[in-house]
Length: 120
Length: 111
Image 1 (cartoon, rainbow over the protein chains, first blue to last red):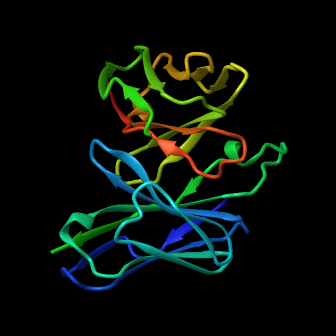
Image 2 (tube, one colour):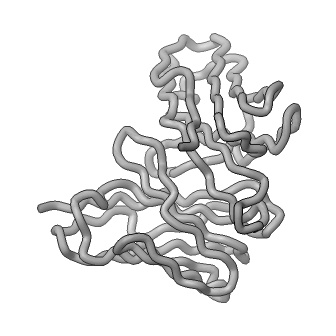
């Protein structure tokens, strides 16, 4: 089974702290994503990466950065945590191409279980 | 721009049917449907590609009307295990890596 593992299930941090959220996938997927999930807003894309050291901004990148030094690992960094970053963070991965040869727009995401971050 | 899902929430009795809609203001290449149970990761249900095809997964099926830029998820003879939040994710073009998700529809199936 494809596994996407997020290192911390629950974190509590103080305002101004630097926060690292780690995500590891074991299926050699090219694409990795960080989403933020808030009630009533669904899943919003923060950043994604389609290759090692490559990254693109999603819809809400402000206050976040990412790092992808190895194919299997994608880190989300909050340089200076703020209370409005209290949320559930979901990591996901997908292959570049499906078995059927579909292009990127058809790729299925496999999600991790999420990291619930509380910033006090 | 996020696709719009409706309804926001629905409560069913076991065995009843439901329809969840997902509408986009932009042309779509694909629509994905995911289900998230409480405290768990979202899980892929099915994908529909440009072409108006209909797909099925157990007693759950979906359609995609690319002209109307909308998709519908049909849950037939609902089971208790169908409870959860359903998300549609849309991709505007074949070359796009990212999915834009709707705000979700909470479904509760009662005995």
